[in-house]
Every structure is written in structure tokens, then in C-alpha cells.
Image 1 (spheres, rainbow, N blue to C red):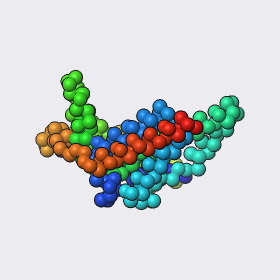
Image 2: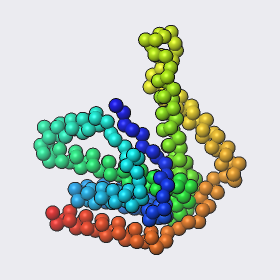
Image 3: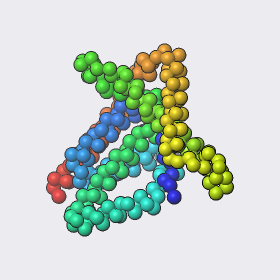
Image 4: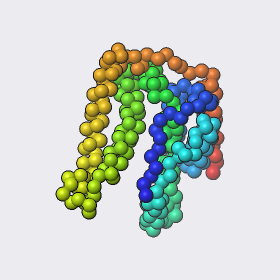
Amino acid sequence: MTMRTVPLRQVPGDSFVHRLWAGTKLVIVLILGIMTWVLPSWPALGMVAAVVVITALVAGIPLGAIPRPPWWFWGLIGIGVALNASFAGIPGALVFLRAITLALVLVASSILVIWTTPMADVAPALARLMRPLRWFRLPVDEWAVAIALCLRGLPLLIEELRMLRAAHRLRPTAKGRSDHPSAEMGIMDLITAAMSSALRRSAEMSEAITARGGTGRLTAHQAGPGRADVVALFVIGLACAVAITVTLVL
């Protein structure tokens, strides 16, 4: 059994979350990540998990989009808990569970941003957030375009891997025709084919970007924060303050 692929593409909607500026969502993820990294307590992790769940409900994310890990994923977590408990006792097992929970909530919050944000808004938002770095003559626009294209290319690469895997399953197996060359295809062949396809797609994408005026047009969108973004940042800041206070009190 394999993990069902997460649809890393925008989920259509007109909710409060969808209308937020892309830069605000990135700042919120950064704040939550820093807080849970500096203070990885159960109240802080619970607050971040609650923010992710409430945001997903407000954004109208369908239940079918939620990934379902296979049984061996939970089995590995159980083995890790048992090993830490045997060597470091209950405190070691709790630290291991906090680390796993931290990783899961951060991944979930990052995927939530991808679900609710058009990819065309990511590059301008990154360029605006990194504007102070221009004072040091750093290539801010190029970095923003590179990050945005990586996010845009990730769903394409996942889809390409799925297509290659499905095509490989349709080919004759070693039991049917042992002389067929595809019968010996392994994981390295699959990765090599995916890399070749990714290089071809990147060349086509670069030609398309050049034909449309270059990378400057990708960061030229002048969207910015509004009142809703201020409200969202205030709510997140208040939730972080409550989580930190509860952690210090307990």
C-alpha cells in the first residue's frame, strides 16, 4: 500500500483564506515554523495544528485532498517510540513524538499555502518580502522566480512520476516475457526517466518565459497586504502569545 498523492495545486474557492495576500501566508508559515522550532512544546504544537485545521475548514478544502499515510508509516513511528522509550524512557518517547508532530504540522501548513494560493502570486510576494535584500545588491527577483518555479514544477514532477509508474505497470513482467528489456526496469531507471522529462520541461518553460518577456514579468504583479491580512497576522500573533504563555505557566 502506498501513500495517496497529495494534490499540490490550488483548490478553487473564494473564502477568507483564498483572499489573503500570498506574502501574508508565507509570513504566517514562517512565524509558526520559528515558534514551534524555538519552543516545541505541546501547547505550541497544538495551537499550530488547530490553526491548520481551522484554516482548512474555512478554505473549504475537501476531505478527499487529505493524504492517508500507509500502515508502514505509522509502524515506523511506533518502532521509533518503542526504541526511544527503551533507551531514554518516557521522556525520550515524548521528545520523539514532539519531533514527529512538529514535522507533520509544518508540512501541513506549507501544503495548505499551496492549496489556497495561485502559483502566479508567489513570485511577486517573495520579491516584495525580500525587498530589503536589494540594499545588499542581491538578486532578489531571480531568487523569487527560482522558488516560484520550483513550487510550480513540483506538481508536474509528481504527475510525471505517476505516469511513468503507471506506464511501467502496463508493460510485460519478467514472468510473462523475460527477454523484454522493460522487465528489468528498476527505481533508478524510473528516476532517470523522470529527470530527463524534468530537464525537457524546464527547457520548454524557459523558452516560454523568454517569449513572454523574461522573468521580470513574473515578479511585476503589484499585489499587497490589505485589512484582511492585518487581521490574520493579529490573530496569529495573539494565538502565538497564548501558546507561549501557557507553555511558560505549565
